[in-house]
Image 1: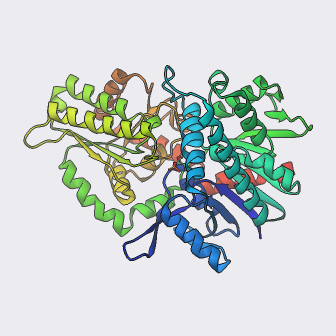
Image 2 (image 1 turned 120 degrees about the vertical axis):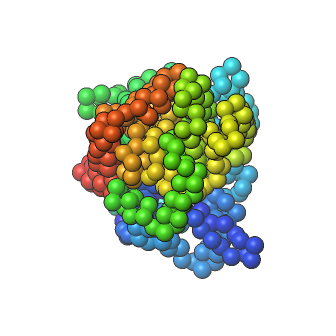
Image 3 (image 1 turned 180 degrees about the vertical axis):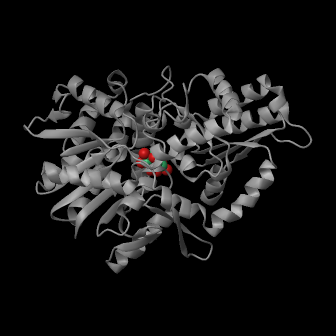
Length: 481
Ligand code: G6P
């Protein structure tokens, strides 16, 4: 049993079964793991996560047979992992239909509103699966948590866990953290009212609710107000039906600059320097690194680059755009269609502008972290233009490891704009003409101006490393108790 338990859908590593039936593991994708890995590694705590891949399920079965928890090694130290395997069909409707296709879409305003969402009978069944998985997570936390332990529940997949856990274990201190934005109250009410109520009630089972920036916390408070709760905006608290006060606080998250620079100096990343140099051949390098994700706004990013080439004929042949994207949520039809559209747009820009010796855009469609590090370190410009984003850690990783004083083009709708605004070129993510101008402006900045901005970016990016971010939540939770 542990005094500290963390619960999230995705765990710190992902297992695959190789051709010989052996298990291999790789780094879990996305910002949530990037943050929690360093925060938790080396501490005496237990991380409860879902078995997502077939490899994860095989790993969970092997550990279950041995009756022990698996210890996984992260770069920052070991973590004890409790992996939960679910019926694959139930897991798919919890993860795909409810968590990703509904709640994630909602908080990032991704619905194609004339057509979606539709909350039909099949959604009701999927919602029951979401409830079931949340109950199972709560039971596992209950199992793992010592008397009076602290439990940190992560993200929109597990919105119901705090309330279930409070019922089962009133002795625990519970926090929930949202790694994504929180939608405007009007948009939030698109959910069936039973579902909207359950999400808010579920989260209010916690003692402490954390958000990445004040905008998302404010939206949440407004949703509570609309749902009939007493909200104190000055104190940032919500009074629950049973008279408790829940604190809603903001914990901005940055990257561990030294740790990342060390990681970028490791042999596998350095080996990628040559690949990147070969691709660049002395040209200016514009990079993006994203999951293949609708909210990352990859299509408008490419469109803006195409427009930049159209309006700046002299830049042709002198720049190259390296778009590193890695697959995500491939079961969702929207993501499959989006991937096809991205490929199509890359092809059409290349067909239009390429020469015998120059390919304007190079698209990479696989997870290659060492190469992403090498590309960010060598980039002149990093484009981070999400439609909405809780924080966006790529915007912080790039400046932290840049060897060239990179210029950051950053969407104002990313939480990271709060910390990086003064150093970045901030854009409206829907305005592709503005993005085209920002790319031109970025490439024309003087070395002095670049250095000045890069210093601001580095400071903003590394001010709140994951360890401090997590420690602040632990301190607050202890003080609230
Ligand atoms: C975002 C979410 C995380 C999630 C990650 C990767 O960062 O906030 O909770 O783990 O995306 O998405 P995936 O669906 O692959 O876990």
